[in-house]
Length: 336
Image 1 (spheres, helix red, strand yellow):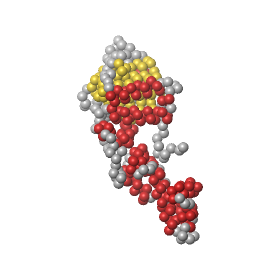
Image 2 (spheres, helix red, strand yellow):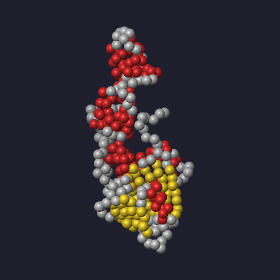
Image 3 (cartoon, helix red, strand yellow):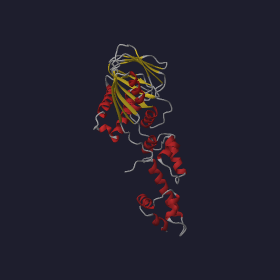
Image 4 (tube, helix red, strand yellow):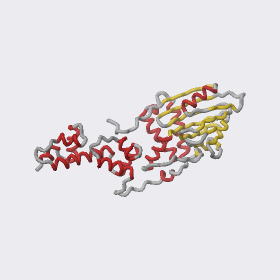
C-alpha cells in the first residue's frame, strides 16, 4: 500500500544513555540532545554524578536526567516547547521577564520557545523527565486538532499539575516512553508504534496544560453545516476546479491552502467526504466524461482526452472511469 502524497515518514527512535562525573561531558550530552548550555557548580565539593537516558523520535525528545550536585544551568532561548517533570527533588527557574518558578514532583514546569531560560538552582539529587517538542510540529498538531489555522504561538501556563487528572496521565506516558524505548526489543522502537506515541504526547500535552485553546479542544465538536467549508478547503477546491489537469499533490495543495498537509487531509475528510487526491481524480473523471459526451464521431480518442486531463496510466484511468460512471470511456464516446 503506498502512502498518500505528502504523508509524514514515521519517526525512527534514537537512544542515548550515559553516566558521568565529568561536567564537560554532561554539557556535551545536553547540547547534543536538548539545547546549547552553560553549567555552573553551586557547590565545589559535590560530584556532578550525572545520568542521562534520552530518546528522540520525530518531533519529540524525552529523557530522564539526574544531577547529584547543586547546579545552575543557562540556555538562552530554547527555540522549542519544553516540559520538566521532577521525579525526585526540585528546580527553580525563570524565563525572559516572567516570574521565577519552582518545579516539583507535583507541579511540572512548562517552558516557551522564546525568552532567555535559566535554571537558577538544580537541587542536588533531583531527577526529572525532560520533554522537548519542536515548535512547528506542536503548532501544526494543534491546527489539526482544531481543524483550523492557528496564527500565533501557543502560550502555555508555566505550571502543570501532574499529581492528578490529565497531567498525571501525561507524565506517566512520558515515563513509560523513556523506560520502554531503552529496551532494545521494545515495540516503541518501531516507527509504526513511535509515530502514534509522538501524536499521543503532543495531544496529551495540549489537553493537559493550560493555554488559550484548551477549552476549545475539550469541547465536543458541533456538526458542521452541510454547506460550510473552511477557507483553506475552499482555496484547495478552487485550485482543483480551476486547473484539474495540473499535476497537483497533497503538499502543493496544502501550500495553496496555506495549511499543513495533515490539516488539509483532515479538512477534506470532514467537509468534502474524501481526500484531496480523491477529489482531484473525481473532478478529472467528470471533465473527461463531459468532453467525451460532447465529441462528434471521429473527432478525438479516449487516450487523447485522458492525457489532457492528467491521466497518464490508461489502464487505471479506464478502471476508475468504469467504477465512477458504470460504463467504459469508449462507451461514453460512441453513445448516440
